[in-house]
Structure formats: C-alpha cells, structure tokens
Length: 403
Image (cartoon, rainbow, N blue to C red; front, side, top):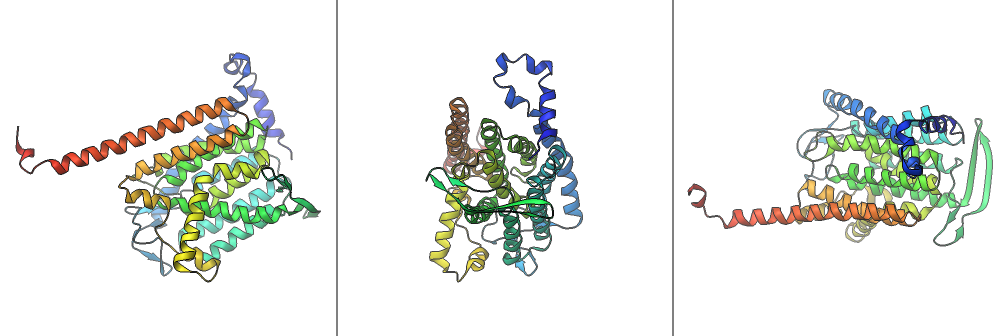
C-alpha cells in the first residue's frame, strides 16, 4: 500500500506557520487533515444542488403513496418523508470519497478493490433510486461488492475481544496483476459482516436526516481512531466523508430538501465497515461504532421472524414494517428534528466508548460531554414542546380574543 501522495501533502502542511504555533504540536496530527475535510465540504457543496436538479428534472424522486416498478417506494403507513423529494443525493457524498481515493492514493491491490466495490454499489443503488429494484437484485450487487473486499488484501484476521485467530487457513494469489488474499474463517465472517453493516445502516434511513447525521458522527469517530493507529488511508478518506456529509446533512435535515436515497444509504454502511476495519483491524471497534443501528437491526429481524415467519432471506428483506427505532420515537410524538438530534446524541455516546478503547481519555471526555450536551438540548426541547402543547389544550376558545 503506497500512500505517498497523501503523506507528502500532509508533510508539506507541517511547514505552515499556522501549525507551527501549536503548543508542542499536540493536536497537529489532527489538524493536518483539515484540508481533506474542506475538500469534502467543497465538493459536496457543488454536487448536492446539481444532483438535486438532475433528479427533479428526470423525476428520480420519492413520492409518498406513488408506486414505481409496480411496488411502493416505502410502506404507506410510515409517511415519514413529506412531499416530492429528489433522490440520488448520496452521490454528493460518495463521489467526493471516490475522487479522494483515486487522487490521493496509489492505485494498487489495496485501493482498486475498494474502488471497484464502491462503483458496483454506486451504480446498482443509483439504478435502484431510478427503477425501485427488487430486493433480490439489491442483495445481488451487495454480495458482489462484499466478495470483492473479501478476496482483496483486506482481511479479518482476529477477534480481539474473544482472542481468536481467524487466519488458520490462508490463500494468496494474483489476479489481473492484483494481489489477492483469503484468510479463513475470518473472511467468511467479514463477508457476512459487510452485508449486515450495509443493511443495518440502510434501515436507519426511514426518517429524514437520521442516516446522514449518524454517518457523519461515525466517520468523525473513525477519523480519531485512525489517527490513534496511524492509518493514513482511513484518516484521510473519513475526513473527506465527514466534510461531504456535514454539507449534505444541511440539505437532508428536516424539512428535507433532498435525500440520500439508495445511492447513499447503501454505501454509508459499507464504507463505515471497511474504514473501521482498516483503521485498527479490530472487529470490536466497528461493533461499538454501529451499536445503535445494529441493535435496531437485530430487534427488527427478530420481530419480523416472529411476526411474519418469512420462508427465506429475500422474503425477510421484502418486509416493510414500522418497527424501527425512529418509528417508535415518532409514536412518542417527537418531531423529526428531535429524532435526528436524539439518535445523533446516542451514537456519540456509544461511539465515545470506542474512542475510550483506544486510550484517548481526553477525546472520550470531549465526545461524551458533547453527546450529553446534545441530549440535554433535545430533552429540553421535548419538554418545552409538550408544555406548549399542554397550554394550547388548556386555553379556552374565548381566551385568544381577550386582552
């Protein structure tokens, strides 16, 4: 793996006066990635309106209650997205990531499989936004992308919390000039794990802004972890992703102007899974970062198995119910904005444990404190909304005309 382009750019930044003024350079290793964050912001700022206009022009939109390809885009009972909303928005996040990988890193046996897997998911999910593809087709391109990573040099070789070595049988070979590696049983687990992460994150996209806010938070946490383990690739690309998602979140925050669509929500979980494993090669880190969507994923799966008794995996994926966490929060009369901030606070809170596991106690304290602060603001907002609603109910019809 040759990261010379990104490394040279980072080294040049060390000579800038603004960085030399830092006390002992304690935070320099974090700040020197700021240009990549800005690149993500700039590209997303340019691409988001363009993609939105293209989606509207060609009617690549979500319309509540309207069918495409003889099936609903969503369960009509959910009604979480209001009005006609452009899809394809996730491309404003994934295109900058793809560009950053190609520009800042050498195309080799490490980066090329990631690029190919991303292109498969981007093309397949963009077609899903356009044609509302069947579940089996969606699963097919997810499996293909996962297999490309499994046969690449990215391997899952251990489960640190169980102290298990997962490279009992290894197979190294070359294909089209690219080095391939298969470690068993680890890569079998990696294959299933990629599919779980894709769909666990994807299922959080039922309400506006949730998947974007959670993904922005998780990529930011991956950046801190990657810095701790000196992973230049994950540090660089997670910063680009965080910058792109920050801008896109402004457009996706309720009331939503554009949605990530399948072209975004399919990629976010995949990239989080791959970047987290590359960052420190620990399976446990990814679990902690994705704990909230994973718990929701497992709960919904169990609920569907018990309620609908599907015959196979495809039947299970076709089920479109209202058992997700965001649906339950809506039943508590929380607004869509409150749900976004509350889930973001919960992701920060749980993610701070992943930071703590790296020994970064100060960053754990900062992230934990931020999560508590956001949570407090949301709860205060909820209480104020309930109080205002109670006052309206108690107000008599005549009182609004009195002086």
